[in-house]
Amino acid sequence: MSLDPITLSVIQAGLQQVCDEMDLSFSRAAFSPVIAEANDRSDGIYDAHDGALIAQGAGGLPVFVGVMQSSTRTLIEMIAQGKVTAPKPGDIYIVNDPYLGGTHLMDVRFARPFYRGGELFCWLSNTGHWPDTGGAVPGGFSASATAVEQEGLRLPPVRLFKEGELDPEIYAIICSNIRVADQRIGDVKAQAAALIVGEERLTALMDRYGDETVTQAIAELRRRAAQQMRAFIAEIPEGAYQATAWVDSDGVVNEPLAIRLSVTRADEDLIFDFSGSSPPCLGPMNSVRATTLSSVYLAMRHIFPEVPISAGAFEPLRVRGIEGTFLDARYPRPVSGCAAEVSQRIAEAVFAALVTALPDRVTAAPAGTSGNLALGGTDPERRRDFVMYQLSGGGYGGNSDHDGLANGCSTIGISKAPPVEIMEQAFPVLYHHYALRDGSGGAGAARGGLGLDYMLELRRGHAKASFVMDHGRFGPQGVLGGGDGAPNEVTVWQDGSAYTPQHLSKEQDIPLGPGDRVHVRTPGGGGYGDPSVRDRRAVKHDVEMGYYTADQAKDLFGVDLTGNDYIAASENRFRKKQP
Image (cartoon, rainbow, N blue to C red; front, side):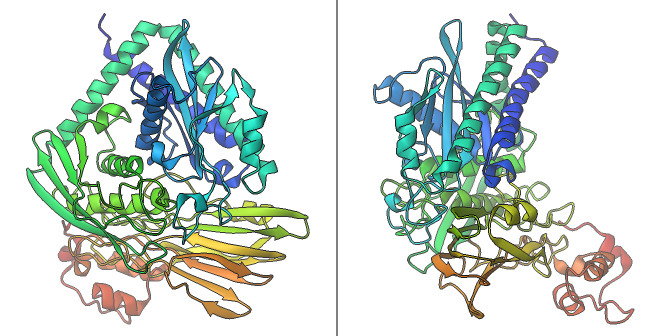
């Protein structure tokens, strides 16, 4: 039986819709602001035999595209080996072990088998960022952990739900090891409910089109995704392209970590070789293999967004040279910074390597940090403990067509910062300001987007602040003559005195009392192209909007706005589109 193009397209959209509805259900039912408001979660459908990605929600985090595929494959292998109990209808497995196809411990994955006619057809899976999984630091982002046990509770695949019923003993073990445990039931039930919604919607889709037709469509979509990715790879001139991206430090040893990358087009495939990158580090900035692979995949999704989200899209992408580096973490290396920070440096390295080959598709470096800030303490007014998790955006890199987006979400996802009003309602904090960070975008023919500038104050009680961020030592890279974006800056005010962490963007257990404040200024994006050829009207608009001062405009772009004179060439020069 051959599929006509219309039926194939309808089934493709139907599979996508199943995942989108899972995403929506998950966010609407979750208790934690990081899921309910920030949408730090993802849902997808995975092959029953090899865990290959079939479909993922459009609103899910891109970094989970490859990670959840790897996690599902590992679960399948462990079931086949007898290491994990075989599934029954209604079962839901829980796992957050980073070394079993994961990220960091806060990203908790659920997987539910989907049956047709008594046979396992596929897996439905999702990931949600829990605001706490125990460990030394509230929120899980330990900046100085030297072993994964210090980062929180590590769960191998176990059946949290057995034939539809929550296992009270396993749930009790989880609650006994995490903070604010009474609030977790809302997220657990939301995560499970999203998979049930997926089962209902996928059943309806298959009832309508038939099992054979849907199976055939899935195989064809995977084949076409691989074919399309190879067609785009053919646009890249043959050769090798190198780049280096830097992680500030590992949080323990105050020295930068290098991600060295060589990208080579070999016929229809792309080879990503990370040989020469820094060795495994002592602190929590190691990346597990699944996250490293997924970071490469998501970078290519940024470059070629037309390729459908399917396992086939990853087949032409081959990653080498990570063995023996901090990009292939093995137990017990700490990994809390891998998904939120190191993954973005990996993507940045891919962008920097390929921008000369694909100047019309690749941008300058984005902010490249999730701005992970956690406060954990006690609220005396409400007589309860709290764990607050704040993520934040930054500037996108400029590109051949336009300036970078200001205060965009991180490279790895679509998560947005929870609204200030929600955070102030849920936690004993007050935001003094929450604004764009003026002057932070890298100069260029297309400037980088602006970062974020916010300050929050602890209103009552006592708390400890911890943060794992990056790009504090080096700003996001400008390309093709563009300037770097401003680096990340964190200042903590205690009893009126300013404190800057030794590791700039990484610190933990900083005590805060009423009136103490944390001031964060996130990076701007890198600039694209020669700043001196930026349209003078665009520079004037930037100054009028307060993005740059007149002095910055003169220094960075060569445009004098102190009078009507502009240091520039003719009008035509500014109108000329620069590479």
